[in-house]
Amino acid sequence: MSGKFYTPDGFNDTIPEVCAFKKDAENKLRNLYARHGFTEIETPGYEYCDIYTKPGFVAEEDLFKLTDTKGRLLCARFDGTVPAARYAATIAKDTLPLRLFYIENMYRYNQAGGGKQCEFTQAGVELMGISGSDSDAGIIALAISSALETGVTDIQVTIGQTGLFEGAAAQMGFDEDTKSLIRQAIVSKDSVTIERTAKELGLSDRDKETLLMFAESTGSFEINDDLKSRFTDKGALEAIKNLEEITEALEDYGYGKYISVDPGLIGSQGYYTGMIFKGHTYEVGFPIFGGGRYDKTVGVFGREMECVGFSLGLSLAVTALLRQGLKPEMPKAEVVIGYEKGNRDARCTAITMAEQMRSEGTVVILDTSCSDEEALSRFADENGIETVMFFDGGKE
Amino acid sequence: MLTIALSKGRLAEQAIDLLEKAGYDCTAAKEKSRKLILEDEKTGLRFILAKPADVPTYVEYGAADLGVVGKDTLLEEGRQLYEVIDLGFGKCRMCVAGPKDLTSDKLDRIPNKRVGTKYPNITRAYFEGVKKESVEIIKLNGSVELAPLIGLSEVIVDIVESGRTLYENGLDVIETVADISARVVVNRVSMQMKADEIKPMIEKLKKQVELNNEM
Image (cartoon, rainbow over all chains, first blue to last red; front, side, top):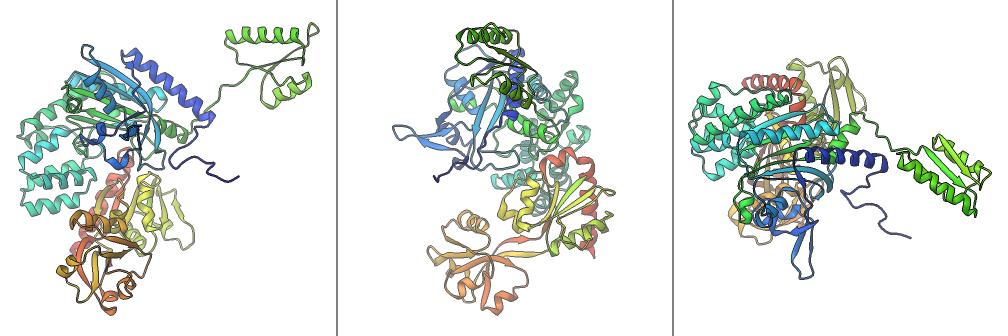
């Protein structure tokens, strides 16, 4: 027989050892979010492509597509935020704020390797209908708690604000092309392009320094008077205040040690409208969580709403933990119970015994292969099962 | 421990030279052997020698923290990386080249032209994105100059250093697509998680590059 008896590119089996571990992490997160008053939502596995492509959130080629029975274009769920925004705008009639969370598989083309797959699990949280620095900080804190809950402890979170670059661009009078060129240069920390462009535009040294600050400020960055004196734009000054308030609040959560401000974190597509953050850890080359404020997204679906949220790459977190040396363990059978073949009395006793022990929380395998006592002992030895019980009708 | 991915060949030698001048002990990297991983526990540096086109991949996935690679490879691979220093060596241009008598104007008038290249992504981005026209791209793996000579394509997109190979084959540069030189790239997570090691290295390398440029 010939055929493609392997999984498609970018799709993997989650083997039992890893699966047990991953599901355990999912349950911990589900409980964590529930304790914070968030309710779980399941959105459809397929949406109309339009919800992603019409507002320009996602490029068409990044979506897994198929058609419905009427020939309309559908795509597999790309993320959790856009469907949640659609839901919030069109279906949810609850009083605001909405506190939603999801743990779902996402599907993306143009992803590959390094723990990044076309199909991967994300846990995410959306707080809809509230603005303000305290909400921003609360969401970052919950993201940090999520990572800690899964067992990832070496976390560094960078926090940026889209208003800073927007303000700088407005102050310096950039046209759209220049702005997008500089934005791209900042995103890739390409100071070469910034210096060249600053020269071409004839910017002052101070303005050039400000732009370079966006690109070169990794590690320890301080919000100080020098930073404030660089901005006259109202939005930028509000952004700085927002960052100050967020870092202060995160101190109160006890999470000060995990965070740093990075003005270069400005978002590449203009999807975020305020605070924006990313969480990193060792052994995976990609951020394991990220999020921010997106006040314009729900409005696209017809109901203005201020929102902040994040998603955590559960598959990435699991990869990180495995590479950081975690040895996942499968839940192990403790008892195996056998019975004499064809002996109904023995079988009844065995079933009763198995059910009773299971109800007490013991992991029990009922041997339905009807092996004899000797074979059953061998099976138990080979699989590290401590207790063997065998029923042969009264004679036990 | 920092892992640095180098593009096998001349670029690797120049990068090692620069690192040494900037004060990093690269004895391990200069070892003459066929080893692909050259590690020195004392200095905390590990070098991997990779094919140039693979360097951005190693760095994007975080298998290497930093890499030294030509801008041509970066443009072609389009990976998500921090591109932090222009090292100033390995300079050349990415060009559209063709027969000597083919001017830019004449080129624009050829409909559905065929372009031979080792760099299909750069070629597509240039013709579709900048010149707003569709072309037929013929992917080649070397001696690209052959293509217009024997009628496989009208023009080529390739790296031009001195231009000698072009001239000796009756070809010439028609348009410049991009200026190329060696760059230092950094993984986005490493930049954050290993900032203590990476930031000083970037600063020292930048200073050294400035000194080189002044000379």
